Length: 333
Length: 295
Image 1 (cartoon, rainbow over the protein chains, first blue to last red):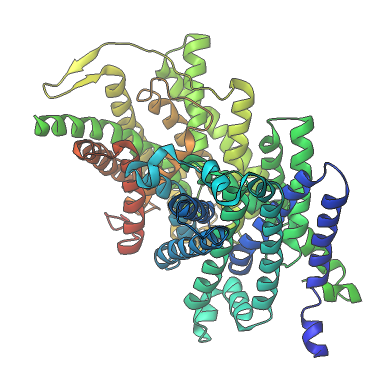
Image 2 (image 1 turned 180 degrees about the vertical axis):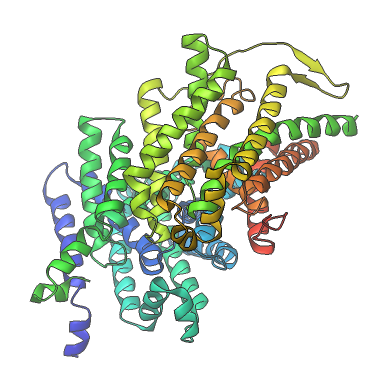
C-alpha cells in the first residue's frame, strides 16, 4: 500500500496546483475567467504531452481531434434537443459522442501516419486539421461552412439559467476534471510497461524494435489516448462554453501551436511540465493581450526558437536535473 | 463543351504547376541536404509575395526584378536563420528542427503583419494576354511559367557543373566522407539552407502572378500543405522530382476542380484542397520515395 502511494506521489504537486487555481478562481472576484483559461491550457498541455512528450513525435494536426469533439457535442445537442425526457442525459451523450468521434478519427489518422517516422509523420499530420475542415466544407457535411449554432437548443434542454451556469462555470470544472484525469493517465502510463516501452522508442526506435518491443502498439495507445482527451476538451471547453461551432475556428492550427509551446516550455515528457508550461504561457498571454494586444505570437515565436536552442528540456526538465539528489526529486517527474 | 473546358483548365494547370514545382524545389533541397523539413515553408513564400507587392506598388519596380531581389533577400534570411538557430540543431532530434522552422514561419508572419496589416492586398501588372484557342493566358502567368523553368535549369546547372554544387552532392552522398576529403560540411549546410530559402522566397514573387488580390500575411499555410504534397510526389529529397511533382499537382488540382464543379451540392474549391490531403497520405503510404522513385 505504501509503495502504491509512493508511486503516485508526483501527482501531489500537480493536484495542488489545480486546487490552488480552483480556490483562487472561486474566492477572488473577477479571477474565474483567467483561471478558466489557465485550466484550459494546462489540460491542453497535459493531453498533448501524452503523445508528444512520451513518443517525441510531433502531431501538427492535433487540433482536429478537438474539432471533431466539438462537433460531437454540437450534434448530440442539436439532433436530440426535441426528444422528450432526456434532459441532461443529452450532455452525457454529447461527451460519449465526442469521445467516439475523436477515437475514430485518431484510429483513421494513426493507421496511416503512425507507419511513418519523424519528419514523414509530421508531414502526414500537418494536413489532418485542414483536410478534415475542407471535407466538412466541401462535401457540406454537418451544415458545411455555415457551422452549427445551438444556443437555443441548449437553453431548451437545460433551461436558460442552467445553460448559462454550464457555460460560465461547469464547463470549466469539466476542463479541470479532464486536466486531473490526463495527469493521472500520464503517470499511470509512465509507471507501467507502456511508459518504459515509449521511453525506449523515443530514445532509439530501431533498438527498441530489435529488443522485441511492439513499438507500433504503444505508439497507437499513446496517440489514441491523447486524441480522446482532445475530443473531450473540445466538447467541454469549446462546445459547452460557446454554443456554436464553425469549421475554420475549431480546426485552426493555432491551437496545436499553443499546445506545442506549452509542452516545450514546461518540459516534454514530464508530468509537471504541462502544468508549469500552461501557467507560464497562459499568464503571459493574458497580460500580453492586455498590455500589448495583437502581438503575442510575435513575442512567442522567437521564444520557442530560444527554448529549443538553449533549454530543450524546458522548466521542469531543468529543475529535475538540478534537484536530482534531493527529496524533492521524488515529486518531480 | 465540358471536355474543352477541362482541356483549357489542364493547360492552366500545367502553367500553375510549373510555379508550384519551382516553389517546392527549395523545400526539397533543404530536406535533401540537411534532412530538415521546413515547416515554415509557406511563410517564406509569403515574404516573396510581399516583396513583389512592395516593389510594384511603392517603388514602381517590375516584378521580374523583384524575383532577383527576393532571391537575394531570401538567401540573407536563410543565412541568418541558419547561423542563429539551425546550425545548433542539425544533430538534435527531429522534433527540434520541426519546431524551429515552424517558429521561424510564425515569426515572419507576425513581422509582416505588424508592417503591412492583415488585410488582403494585391497589385495589378497588366501586360496583355495570349489566346491559345481553348483558353486565354495572361502574359504574366506565361512569364511566371517560363521563369520557373529557367530557374529550375539554373539550379540543375549549378548543382551539376560547379565546384560548390559537387561539394553539396558529396555531402548528400556521405557527409563524413566529404568531411574527410576536406569539404567544409558546415559551409555546405549553410549555403544549401540559404539557397533553399532564397528559391522559396523568389517563388513567392512568381506566385503573385496567379493571385491578383490574395496577398496576406497568413496566405502561406495552404501553400505549405501543397508544397508537402508536391515534395512527396517528387520523393521529398529531390529538387527536380519536386519540379515534376509540381506539374503533376497543378494538373490534378485544376482537373479535379473542373470535375468537382460538375457535382451537385458540394463546394469544389474545398474538395480540391481535401483531395490534395488524400493524395499526400496515399503517396506516403504506397510510395514514399515519390512517383519518380527519388531520382
